[in-house]
Image 1 (cartoon, rainbow, N blue to C red):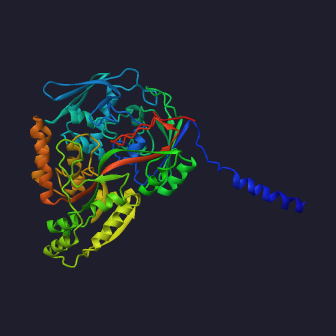
Image 2: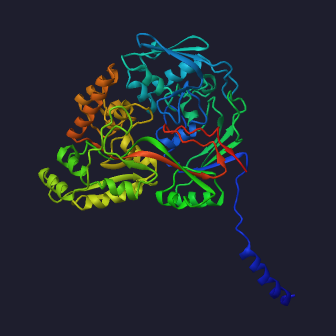
Image 3: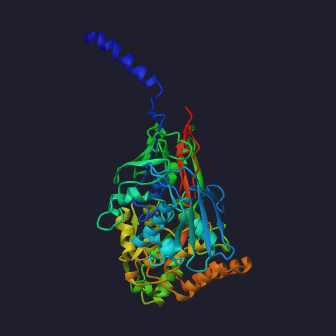
Length: 534
């Protein structure tokens, strides 16, 4: 028997070596998506922050309208089949489509729509700032949102503003998400309007429902059998927390996952040669930036902030760290939007930075902390900036962690330096960038305007607030364009608390047999259109 095994073993080994590798394959009716979920802290649309949560909720909740994936200036119908703007630009009237239901089976009515908007304003959570900045509030919500009948919603603008930007805002996941009021209020707890329950439950009318969320592990979405639109091809979507880019790459190559949302530039580049994998890159929203806290005495000094401007290797970061993630941009308005100026042309200039630090009273530099979430490309960008800061004597200790640790500190205004991502851009309008990154109508700690990066940095400038407000309501397009150019020039002169070094682009890797995937610049990539051709 032993002699027989000696004869057979080499044959078995040889056949194993000659056989092609056997790859895993995800089920034909289940989509498996990998990305980092470190920044998913809640699934309540009113309270969310960050693109990762939007990627989940866009498949669960519908809005009145949707922002088009390929034409950023186009707004498409969703729960509303049509809308009109009054002649005096003071009101928008939406007509709801017939037959739409929530996952519970409850019909979608105008009462649910206005309840969702009023809930948003009353709870005053992160997403409320999108509407608060245009004058909406808990106090005027009853007058602002009305329902003349079950199929009609009227939104009255509390102050003069371009109505189109309000329509666009209602297309964003978060401020525009429509909730099943009856289902949510069944779980009202001590007047929280279902906030605790919605942390890990859903009440939408979208193509999928929330099956399960296990923090930093997985999110499972189940096909909504009561979905009013075209039935999705996938019965289930499994979203897996894969913080390591290499893990996403290896699993994508093996077929263990179908889509990978957050891979490093190196791994995306390596996959370009794999015939079984495709890479898609599309314009994104917002910026990668270095931000200071102006609660810190050092960073209140313009010379110190200006020194930091010249301690960023803009070209080097974009060439080595941000391929597939960003492209060089050092202005606060994204390329291609109304009035966007060419880059200012800032470069790494250590000698100039040292001179500025000496003028500010720090000839030998100083010690500080630099925060960055532990995902790509943030850590790589933070490490690169740490090195260039050190060349001018600034010793920056990197603090890393999940979103609640890093962005949580920024929202509480308890940090020194941070490498972040944000600055609006979900709306195809320069006001979206400026409201997020520049504007701060109330700098008090009590205001808690956490969705404004300007507020998070404790940056406040009354003049620029006024310039942003006036540009938005300017009816003459040529004058409006000039206004946005003037804002960018003034922003550069004052030396801001946030210095962009790249504007976001989004890249995704996916198996070649995946069809119908289309990245949306507003982060709202719809998976209901995805199919597998096998």
